Image 1 (tube, helix red, strand yellow):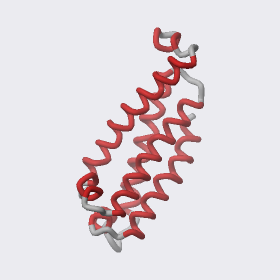
Image 2 (cartoon, helix red, strand yellow):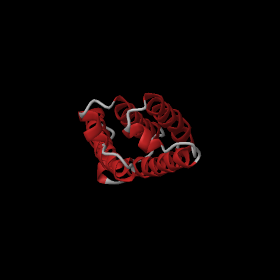
Image 3 (cartoon, one colour):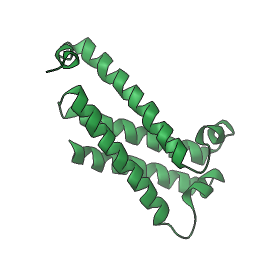
Length: 138
């Protein structure tokens, strides 16, 4: 058992550790999502693009939900981080599949144009799949 894991038996230390790691994972994983999309999500949100906000919100929820499942498995913090990373990769693959399986329009272009139907669908897909991925990785 590692030093960090031995500290996790204390509730406050556990909350702070998982919270810190969760925030770091969210920042890293969300920045990866930002790099693969064809639009600048934060710039679009700043301009009031509701579709970009919904899609980004879905990604945030999806990432956090997968991490929640990995914490709930009761593994070490290192295993939780590993499973969260695996879950994120699966969520990223799902994103690319969503883009590929909709050949009639480009998801990123539609979100960039504030097509709210596409933004809502992107959010629901991220949220829904995070439950399946989370349950599978734990």
